[in-house]
Every structure is written in structure tokens, then in C-alpha cells.
Length: 200
Image 1 (cartoon, helix red, strand yellow):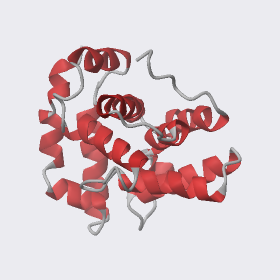
Image 2 (cartoon, one colour; image 1 turned 90 degrees about the horizontal axis):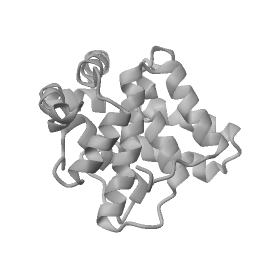
Image 3 (cartoon, one colour; image 1 turned 120 degrees about the vertical axis):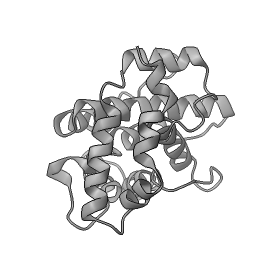
Image 4 (cartoon, helix red, strand yellow; image 1 turned 30 degrees about the horizontal axis):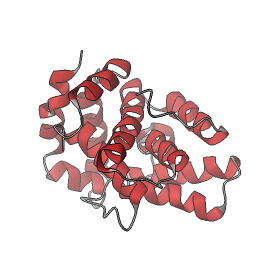
């Protein structure tokens, strides 16, 4: 983990503060783990040139739309979270285009797949959250790295918490990505994720 420095910027610090204020602890830990999985996959695959600050902000805020305070009655939770990121990064002085990228990357994390040639940050976040939620590519990152991140940011309660939140979203918003994820067996994947067995 020491190889991957967390961006030290106003936007990065504010993103974590917002997540910690509004999201439950299992979701906050999931979001931080997603950052470490994303940069881990980037290193594993030799992918360079990504915007680390943008990726961190997107990772930390990608599920904040599940919080009651940001639960939009029509938008899917990833779109709601993206708009939170847009507003937060506006306050941090980001350009309009970079704010739009934060929103876009967060929305892309719920796509079935993202082409890294088209959107590297979106690909890294989608791959990272796929690991932490569904267990996708759990054998790709070194076991020692997985265990180090899990020890620092435990999975305590993430399967039950995320299942509860996404099933609720799917029931209330049947035309959103949440409903697609539930139909695709998300709840079962959460509890069968091999990372659950690695957690200390």
C-alpha cells in the first residue's frame, strides 16, 4: 500500500470527509479499498498516465448516492453520486471539464465493462469495484496485497450493507443500474466473494 500514495489535495480530503459524514462505515471502507484495488490493477497491467486525484475522488464518492441525504428519487445512485462529485470538485476549483470527468467516471463504474482505451479511470474504477463487490479477478492481484488492504480497511458488514442498499434502490427505481445488478445476481456474488474469506 505504501507504493500508492493517496493524493493530498483539498478535493481528495474533502471527498473522504463527505463520504465519512454521509455513508455508513462499510461503504466508506469499500470506497477506500476500491482506490487501492484500482491503483493495484493499474500497476499490475502497466497502465500509466491516469489522473490519480480524479480516480481517488471518484472512488471515494462513487457510492455516496446510496446515502439517504443524496438519494435522488429518479436518478440511479451512481448518477446521484456523480453529481455530488461535480459539486464538491467545483468547490475545489476544478475546471468544468474535469468536474464532468468525475461524474462520468463514477457513472461508468456501474457499466458491465469499460474499455481502458476509451476511459482509463472509468476502467480502473469499474474493475476495482467489480473485485470488491462481486469478486471479479480476485486471483489477479497478489494475495499479500489483498490481505494488507483488507487488514487496513476491513470488509465488516459490506455484503449485507451493500445488498440492502442496492436492493432498495432496485425496488424503487426498476429502470436503473441497481435493478440490472440485482437481476444479475449481485446479492449472491456479494456473499460468495472470495475476499470475504480472506478478511481478518
